[in-house]
Length: 66
Image 1 (cartoon, rainbow, N blue to C red):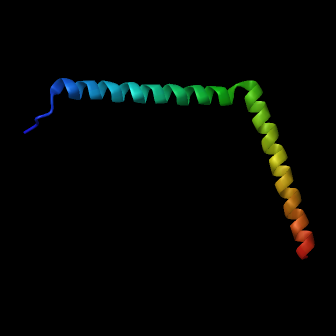
Image 2 (spheres, rainbow, N blue to C red):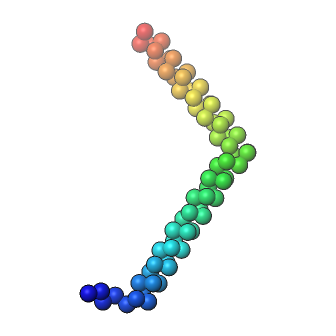
Image 3 (spheres, rainbow, N blue to C red):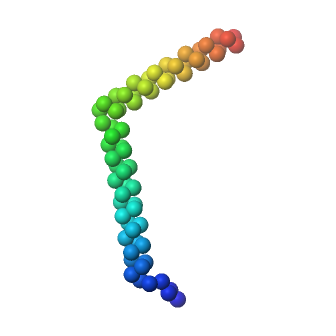
């Protein structure tokens, strides 16, 4: 037997739907921002620098041990 007030349950459902919708909007905005040309180019440049730095450090470690 469900004693919950149907209007309270309906209000809770609406709040949950709004919360999910807001979260999805934030995720979509973040994805769009990441794919914006200036941001994407900067991320790619940083990834290339990071990769080169990792390779350089690895090469230095191999030289030191070998």
